[in-house]
Amino acid sequence: MNKQAQEEKHELMTTAPVEKLVLRMALPALISMLISSIYNMVDTLYVGRISTQAAGAVGVVFSYMSLIQAFAFFFGHGSANFISRSLGAKNTDGAAKMAATGFFSCFIVGLIFMFSGLLFFEPLLYLFGSTKTILPDAKGYFFYILLGTPFIMTSFVMNNQMRLQGNAHMGMIGMSAGAILNIILDPIFIFVCDMGVAGAGLTTAISQLVSFFILLNLSGRHDGIPIKISNFQPRLNHYKQIISGGMPSLARQGITSVSNIVLNQLAGLYGDPAIAAFSITARVMMLANSALIGFGQGFQPVCGFNFGAKLYNRVRKAFWFSVKVGTIYCLICAIIGFTFAPQIIAAFRGSDPELLKTGVAALRAQSVFFVLNGYIMITSMYLQNINKTFQASIVAMARQGLFFIPIIYLLNLVMGLEGIIASQPLADILTFVVSLVFGIRCLNSMGINDAVMQKIE
Image (cartoon, rainbow, N blue to C red):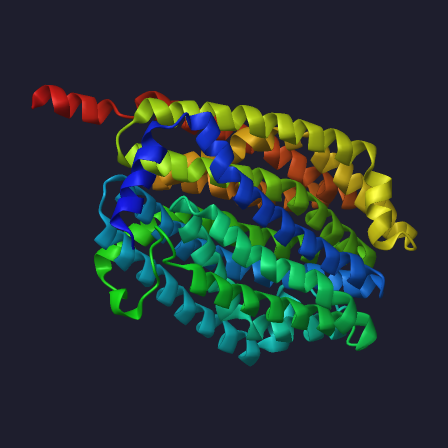
């Protein structure tokens, strides 16, 4: 770890214009997120050509992938937020110990998920919303995802740690290499080797393994924090910091997994085409969200460094700049999604008219209020980075949990399939209101306690 490079990084993050910093930090993260989302999209595009049940299988297993991502982001964001603040305060030793704690703890949890999944294989798939007709395809895909679980999870940890150190370009290299490999191997395993949906699962596992080793090799390069077993110190204080910084991510991604399960189970009442339609819509919206998340990830290290250095005006400036850019982007995506919904859904599986009808309606409904996501996403990241665990967790859980789950059950009873389609837009509106209240309040009060203490001293 180069001390001079760390000093230069600190000066850059705390003195350079925040707009340029956010854009500089965001570009590699945005590219990485887009490429990762595209290869998920490619998975669905290829699998959708096999059958409606195959497309549904990917949606079913997506619930499990959301679950392991929840814990990966819990350890990744929890450790990375502490690392970012520590580097802002010039505490590199504490940052190194936290990096190892987050990485090795997550790998152990990944092994637990893998063995538990293999032990309760079919019951889990039914829990995730599989029907009997989707189950054969889901089993082939799920098996290989399970084998890759520890490596998938720790790749996310390393990517987040690099990103919040201000080294998002290294995370981009590792994640993008795996994504590109996935895109290349997908048609080979699915069609040439005639493995079907199982081939997509095997491709994902291999690609994530490659990303894992690339990211591990890149950690510690230049001014980065290396992953060393000697720094692994599983102490209570370390886990308190991980819980504090990572709980909003666990809440957000965990509740997303639960909401996907609920969505699959309720959609299953209307047949396999409904499950497949919502699965495809989710992938499309994930692509739109991935660029927003990538941009927001450019805001996070700027926020963390300057909050740690108590430069609160720079944090506020970076926040509002990020909200403006994010909102403009979301508006453009909303217009495209609503206008071209039939063509977008048809590209995945246009031969199934029932799937096409449901998918178009769902995509248009979610596009209408997608513009609100710019403020929601940046606010959630801001609250998480400044260690407002409770507020960040509420915002993180609101969209897919606190509002979405009760709304989807209620509207399904009242309106049937149309109610399921309308649930996400309504949840978005309510989440925006909550985000607005928490975000403005924390922005206005940030730094007040420090100012009071300075006067006392």
